[in-house]
Image (cartoon, rainbow, N blue to C red):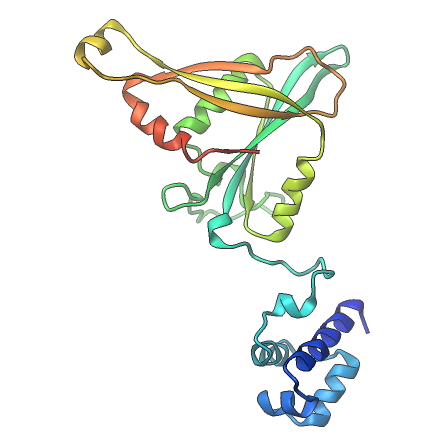
Length: 247
């Protein structure tokens, strides 16, 4: 019997004990012969449908039956935690050639106005799914990446969908390296004509603090980035800026 099956059967016994149920009580609840259930518990061998009945009777989920030690089980995060992770590298010239010396990350909530592009095209066998080009990219995403690319043109952007416990664990591992402070400043581009046509309008600049993760021993690189946006788009940038979660 595999360890995961042992975990399930151990959990079933614990849950029955907590409910003050015997094996016969559980068998009656799922409409199965007690001897059949005893055999399932002793061998750990059963069909998924039977496992679902057991979980329902014991008022738990299938992942809860497996227990926290089974890394194969994907546990979906609460919908409020679903997000799209943006990872941007800083690729700079060094004495060893161009290197990704650092990266920073931020999340955007997975919402109706910020979601994956529907994809009806066939996926090549070697393509990653979801494809990077299908991820959302709005105006503030473009500004952030442009600010970095303007200084370091070979820098890259990688998107990752965060839906499960394993996705969250991956993000936590990415947050292990030491960090340095950085910042991206977005400033509205204001011309005399804009001022004349919008008298009394208040304009803002936006500062996005960065945690630059680095395990590369190279300190001579830019940590502060600047770019501008169309002044008339300030209301758009303001709304998008509020949904950025820097990691």
